[in-house]
Amino acid sequence: MLHRQDAPYQPGRVSHLLKVKSYADAEARVVAHLPGKGQFSGVLGALLVELPDGRRVKLGSGFSLAERRQPPAVGRWVRFKYQGHTHKGTPRFAVFLQTLDDSQKP
Image (tube, rainbow, N blue to C red; front, side):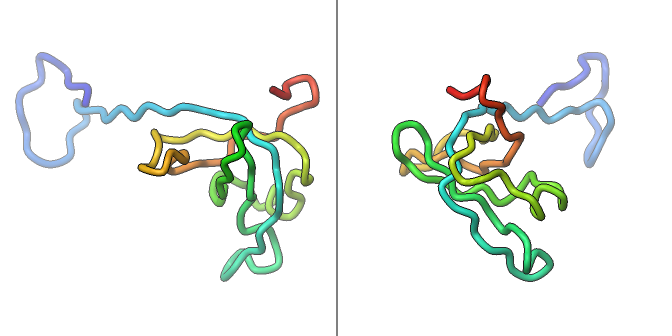
């Protein structure tokens, strides 16, 4: 938490406190498209991606509706952000960021 030094303590939500979350990002190759459910039935629900070391992760958030209708093709590389790793070593809270051009591939 970032706190303005000259601000007095106040209980509850205040404008002089700012929560900072750090993210890491990574690249992975799209392996499969997983179907959506509920409001996303008929469009992409999640991407199954494979990291360079072989681990697989589902990316289910961060997509616009247009990206869900036309998801990145299988075999394309994507970038995603995450907050640390699970006890199994997979990225925690992975969120899709963008599809990489051929010149940006790892």
